[in-house]
Each structure stands twice: as C-alpha cells, then as structure tokens.
Image (cartoon, rainbow, N blue to C red; front, side, top):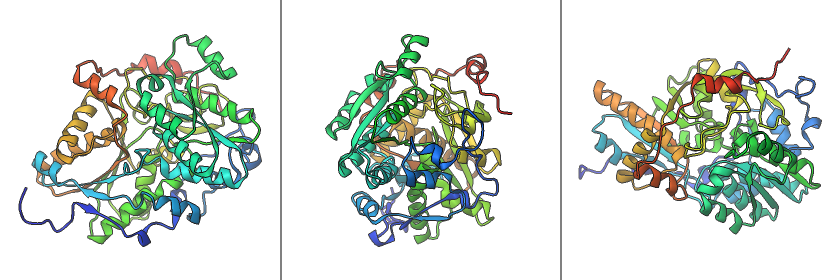
Length: 459
C-alpha cells in the first residue's frame, strides 16, 4: 500500500446530525407500481381491515401506501438508531490492491451492532409500532437467525414478548445464534414444529424436512392470529420492510456525495429483498428519473434462484398457504431449499417491489454457487479484516468479479456493495467449507417445476 494518504478516507462517516430523519418510499418513484396483495379466497386486493388481525395498524398503512414519498422516522426509533448509526461506508483499499484492479470498491457495513446485521433497522421500527398499539408481543420467523436476533433485541428494548420460529436446519446448525435470541428473552422454536396445526401438517406431508422460511412464516402467522394481543412481523419481502431499510441507501448516498462519488455499479445480496431494496432505494429513484446511469445487480444463491429461474406470478407468501398472495418472482411456495445451502437467502420468492423493478429491466440478477461465495468471503476477510456473513458474501463475490472485469478493461468504475452483516455465528458453514464438505447443489428444472406447477390460478 502506498504511504501517500488517500484522498478518500478508508471509512466515510456521517455526523449524527446527518442521519436520515425520514424513510424513503421507492414506490413513489416507480412508473409501474408493485402489484397489490390479493386475498387468497377472493383474489381481490387486500384491504387494510383484512390485514389487521395479522399486522400492526401503522405498518399496514406503510405497506399499502404507494404514493407517500417520505415517512418521518419517530423520535424513539431515531434515538435507538443512534446506538449504531450512522454506519460507515468503507473504501476497500486493501481488497483493491489484492485484486490489482483500477476499480474503486466501497461497502456499506451494517454489522456494527449486537445483532450483527442490517435487520435491526426494521426490527426496532416494527417493535415500536407494536408497542404503540398496546400489544403484548409479536411472532416471526427467521432463516439464518439474523432477523430473529434483531427482533429479540428490539422487543427486549420495548418490553414485548417475542416468539421466533427458526428454520430447523439453521436452528440445528447455529445454536449460538439461537442462544443470543434467548438472552434477549425470545422463545425460539425449530420450524416446522408440532406446536401449530400447520407445522404438524407440513411434518406429516414432508417427514424429516429441514424446513424453509415459507414453513416458518406459516407457523408464525398461525401463532399470531390465535394468540390475543399478538401480531406477526416480518424481516424481509414486505413493502414496509424495504421502507425501513432505506436508511442504508440514504446514508450511502450522503456519504458518497461528500466526495462527489457517483456509483457505476451497485450490488446487493437478495433473498427476500430487504437489504437490496434498502441499499438501492435512492439510487433507483435517480435511475428511474434519468439522473443516474448505474447498473444495479441482485445476487442470489444458485440453490434458491427466484429471480434468475423463477416465474413472475401471484403466489402464496408461505408454505402453509394462509398468507395473502403476492405477485413476485417465485419458485413456488412449496419449494424447500436443499439443507446443503449454508446461509440465509432461502425464501421462495422475491419482494414485489424488486420483482417489478427487475421485470421492468431496471436491475439485473445473477445467481452464484456457494463454494465460490465462501471463497470470496475468505478472500475478503483476509485483507479487509471483517468475517462476512454468508449472505453478504454473495455480494462480495460479484463485486470481486466486476472489479476483475475492470482490471481487464482498465476502467476505473465505482463499485458499491452492501455488507449486510458479520459471520461469527456462521462458523459451522465456514468449517464445512474448509473441510471440503460443502457442495454446490443446484436444483434441476424438474425440481423447480414440481413447486412452480402448484402456483395458484388467478383469473
């Protein structure tokens, strides 16, 4: 590394006073709005009163609002954000040098909190609105465990009960993530379980299943609607979640502006869409309005490839088929990822917002196999000093690929990616990678067709 101090610092920090005071709603800028949620019985657009037994009232209003550009962040939430926000935008000088690339690589690091990920940005918001409504507690699902960890922290802060249905394979592979949730008072159940009617049915239909987010969602929703004083909250996919996560993109935009940096490529991992949707929100607005000509790339696992191999159609949001229908790129609500898949990003569908943007050609999508993801994660960790979460490492993999393309062409492109969190609770996966036990399972077309063929028929 040159002894000359770089013009742009390693970490670009915003002042506390520069933190966003409002969430940005990307739907305001979209020419084609995301399709509405449909009632699974009538196939008519869901009305607010139909959603009230499941969600908090103010969150329903955010979910259904396509027209309000900004939602003010309540002071109580902003006070909580100050514990770990603004988060740094880091110039990856060491990675650039290791790759010998002329590209400038930046990552927005969301792991500087006890939950270890970006999920806390929405968890505290949803817990706040539940407390404001006078509820006793909330239920939820979690895949890799980051959302469950974040929600348990948020519920503890506001004195709410928290019931978490954790995808069984993650429950078994990540006991320490489970224990962090219990430290913060959460009740954690492996899903599918015998504690709900839907869980028992799934176990009967799929003996020995290792679970999926779709299964866990079904159980969490059943628990919420059958328990007085509880509502269901979700860590990804929904419009309201992407809204809360816009703090990531707004801070990134402000940090880049400090040094007149214009991004050429913006990359985020994509499972349900919370991190990617939050990161790209202000940049997608500018792209839609013709003010920015940047490539926006969603990166998903090859083992659960909803954007790259799914179909754009209405589908159930859960495996138990009790939730509303959402129009999204989907593999079918019955799709259950292989247990060989080591990270999160195991949801069968993609956010309706991101699905619409992808269908409109405003962003790209690629799928990557997991051994290459862990190779990229290790390469990054050895020079940048952060052990990344497997989810984040999907974005790292493609950021490295794009930087190496710049090496071939000599172009000095500005590459920005989201580092959603840390991987210190994912060491079982890293162990399998190091021991040569990790495989690159990719579902066949026939595998996918089994679940896709079961999509509901919408007149």
